[in-house]
Image (cartoon, rainbow, N blue to C red; front, side, top):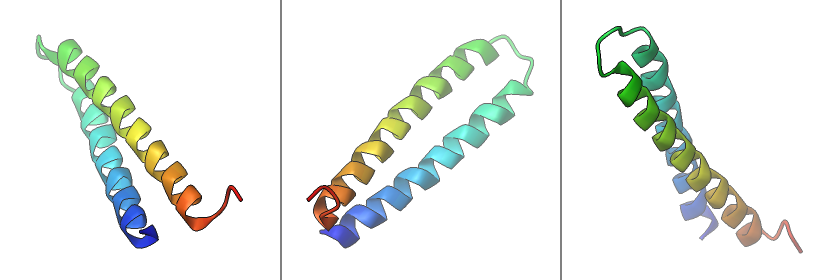
Length: 67
């Protein structure tokens, strides 16, 4: 169980980095839909961060850190 949560956490961190880089790259664009896309990427980043934090808490719980 701990190994599965660890892999899930690392995947969530990788997705978070990808979304963050996509958001930074989007800031350099000057087209008309840049603001809308930036808002969507921010929402996605917050969602992925919440998932990563939940996985980290579940990993700590499974490893016995809260005992």
